[in-house]
Amino acid sequence: MQNILKAIDKNGERWALLLFYVMLVATMFIEVLRRELMSYSSIWGEEIVRYSFIYLAWIGCAAAVKERGHIRIDVIMQYAGRKVKTLLYIFGDLVMFVVAIIALYWSFETVLVSAKFGSVTPGLRISQVWFLMAVPIGFTLVIFRLVQSLRRDVSDLRAGRPVYEGDKLFD
Image (cartoon, rainbow, N blue to C red; front, side, top):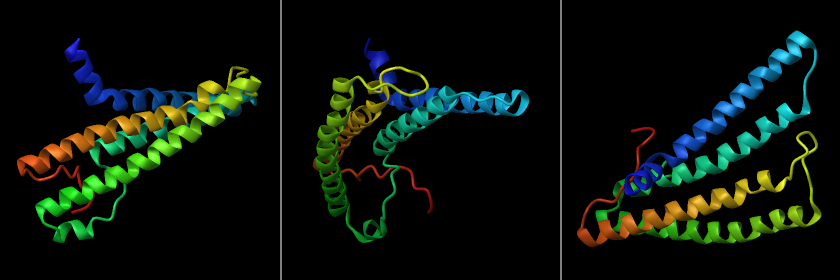
């Protein structure tokens, strides 16, 4: 069981991103073929692509937090010492944590309103709650990854190790 949890922790977002990306590309491919070959398109295909993209964005946000791959300006970090750099990363994670908590709280309001009134998608005719849950799920994953990041950074600070900076896009 412990190995399964470690595998999910290591690659959970990657597998979810792969699933939604394959779903998006396959549906888009099928819809283009249907439109070009049969002069027919469906509304459900557009919805599948749209909602897959939304889930991709929110799960990708959590993956970026995990890998410290989100967009940042790190010019200051090049001139900061090890301790200051770690404290700046901790401060950034704390600010992002507060924003994520607030966004998680408010994102549930939309889900609850949709559930209360029983709104359904126009093409698929299924509850819109399933698709609106992408935002709270995404922010929950972001919060989880931020907690992991904060624990790692505090541990690095206490041990005097250099802070984890993630992979750099440009060097």
